[in-house]
Image (tube, rainbow, N blue to C red; front, side):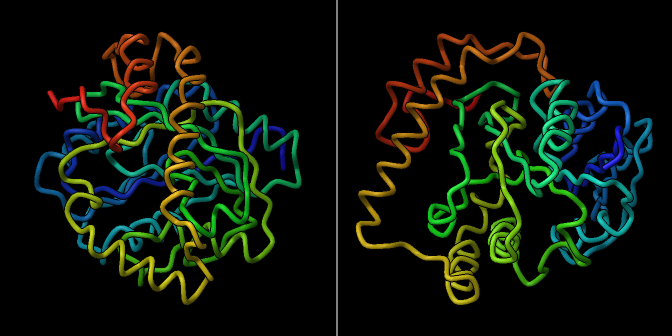
Length: 289
């Protein structure tokens, strides 16, 4: 890898103008200088194209596609970077030093193919709901659950092939990618920092096509050996509890200036939800504004 490798950020987009601006901003604010941001829009009619026309320093295309995986594959084909990042149009990078820190990590660890970090769950307005702690890489855990959220990860180009994603998956294409790379012997490492946000909003696929997720998971069990061991319920509860408890450690690390929003969420508010709302995936005291 050269001293200052090009980083390609790939973004699929379709009718999410409400958050696309924050996505673009989070990339534009990065302190790392050598970035190409490629946005493939599926022919949006909600003002997304106008946002792309006004944005500076990005490469974009807009027109019909076959879905999210197809859009990513098109963006990957256009990209030239040695390091690849993937953030959907409603996701974003956490602060302005994310890519700089990730590149430095890659340079210090030339054997590593995939670097991933922690995440923050945020709402549609940029308010932080809770922190998502991600464990160090463990092959056995990856076979049980997708512990690497897609926006938090960066991949060396050498580990990928064209097409980058399997387009037969509509939901779990990122999970299929991690399982495939792990099966090929690629090296995964966690960086000890918050890298991205996962936005909870009504239009996300987990809310609109949950049945497709289960279908994709069944296929992954057949193709990659993904599946739950005995004691699924206890293991799931234990893993979720660990994530919530360890996520509390991340709260003090939240910087004052965030790349994806100007909204300030009090750390005491985040910590309260993190530690005392245990009975559901979404904290009881949280309400979408």
